[in-house]
Image (cartoon, rainbow over all chains, first blue to last red; front, side, top):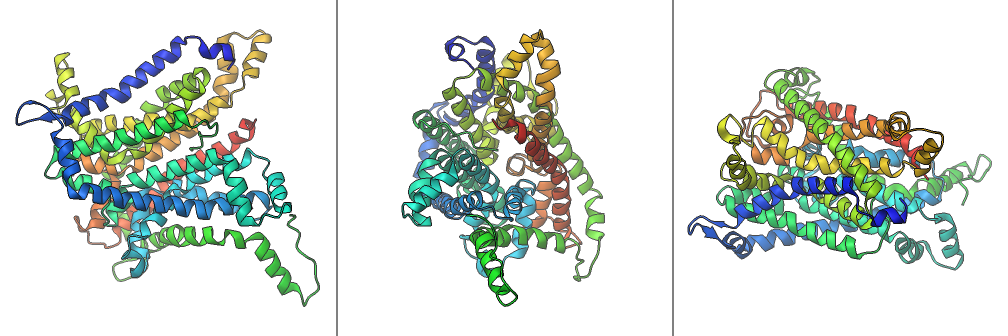
Length: 259
Length: 299
């Protein structure tokens, strides 16, 4: 769109945003109102929020979900970035195969995947919570793969790698010091996406009988529904705000890497 | 960096193979190992076990039971909620994507992309509790609607009913539509509409003959993906229903947890395989259409 059009007021856009805004925020605000009710006094207050953050388990599970998600991001970056760089640079005959495999998790419903996971892994895998980051990695793979693919396609990768290599950089240095900074938009999008997906993952986690933040919330709901609602509000609004602020302040053009 | 394999005589064939392996496959081995062990292996095993009887002999009885009641209703309900939630979300989502992508500033587009991402992904449990608070019997929205003269709970409505769940699903389906459909809008080139106008086409003509035919495949593809997402959603349904609405993901969850027992130990696996087949019927065409349109969408 031409620049002049951008600044001008756009009635159809304004109406769209208004409707979307109502659609998104009315349930959210309405739920927020519910979450600050104090049934005992009949007024409003932060009772349930305070209750939640005073629970010892609150931070325990936030911390646990946090490091699991962090580990998932780490696996994604360490495995995916070098492999995909290599796939793009070399003309490997197995590229179509890997393209296909990386999209496959989209086809498999998570519930079915959970059943498969439960009956397949040897005991030493099932007994450690470290299986989760690898499974989250699989769930996020189609999105991470596409996001990095867009980034790698948008740069003259071959020229860049050859330049770095002939300047004496080894592969590791080429990737960490040259390629990752060049496609940082895609890398950031991949990180955000993988992190968010791992943090919110519920189905697989609960069916494999692990406890993380999202499963703890359903547990809390059994005897303190208002507390659970307060926690849910926090877990929806906080990432919402953080990510919005990040996108508005990080001047990056290739953030739209999803799906 | 060519992929030529060094030509050699018979003695060095082994070495040539090794060289080709190192060049063509070795760097992908870590990824293939992780995906193979943590994904392909469980899926293969799921399919294999779904054909085993309690005595570990081959049988298709698990599948026979899987298509009978109550699992039949489960599948019908899951398909229904997938189709309805996708159908209701697709059109408004597409229109919203169009206005946002074609008229919005880049900051607005990025903000919407991120917010949609959060809504479409974070979803699940927090979403269920949010709607419980908003549209439950004591919810603010319920009271507000009642004030306007619409008593939600006058009939049989509850959040755990089909209609209730449908409303909640729309909350992640609509953002998902915006995300999935936006790339198609971005790739509509302005030159095409200008060219059409120069050749004397009206706005209407442009849309009927060029815009809609170009966007249609992506629209169908997006619809299919939305269907798959609604069809296999578990978390929200699990939190909101109390066993009153049979849905396949919940039935599988029940069997897996041992909350529900079945005569056939491997029934849950068969249900999972049927789910994969149904989901594949939607997602594979989605991927195929995407691939095809990606060709002309490249600038």
